[in-house]
Image (cartoon, rainbow, N blue to C red; front, side, top):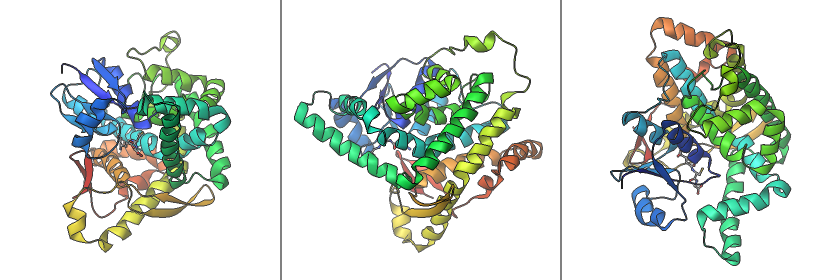
Length: 375
Ligand SMILES: N[C@@H](CCC(=O)N[C@@H](CS)C(=O)NCC(=O)O)C(=O)O
């Protein structure tokens, strides 16, 4: 094979992240759906489980996970690196990668699965075309029924339930307004280059919140700049003529008030969530059998943590993957010189996000063989 192959679905959050990065590199790649027989024949035996996205390299290597796909391509020599050269910006990029890919599941799932009148016919066709493109009418209903039941259950496990609907909507509209204000000034999160932060955010903001009919309408009517950023993030070129045609903003993106407002949003919306997960792990880990912990890959979910999210008592699934994503933020912060650490602190402290750097589960997670492992 002479080119890269991405296995994923048009409506999949983590595929959107990998696809956006691949497109920005201008790489020759082909996208295949999981309903393609080659997914079963070549990919499932290598990953050992049904999960997307998966990338196959021209040499035949199989790489699962949005973040690992990006890092693999970075190591091959990215045309356009996702890692900002400024070390403080690198930490901020990792932070928005964590928040985008793991912290926006509530609005993504709510706006997908709780607006059936607008969304369901679209979702059924979109899902079945990717999962089983040659399905007949009977099989279509079964395929979508199976998949949508799983996804609705997943939504509940992120804390999406009738009592939280209104708070999820209010918080998403707030985020949309803040993103809109930021992208009024800057084509990407950190200025002129797409970074890991943009790739984290594009997962939910493309796959669910810009594509599914109900939230698509919301985004287009309320946040044109966010919609334009989504368009930009899904093309090779910058598609950013409007920015070049007007005066440059006064501050670099990382120092802007609009980025400060986004960081403050992450503090309000996500700090309690990730803190509850890490605290759960810190209590849970010492209670486990060491042979089990160290002898096999980690399950995706290992329990449920309770927290107060915007005044609601919710329970959420605890995923060690999120600890791994958090470690990436913390590791990037640990590399900073004292002077850069002060610059980072000036960004995180006003947003209430400084505690993120000292959240530890007492044990680290590593990615090996396309899975998470305790080390
Ligand atoms: N951390 C993984 C998460 C991948 C993931 O959760 N993918 C979803 C689709 S967007 C999936 O395959 N879910 C399988 C299932 O729930 O059955 C990544 O970044 O690739």
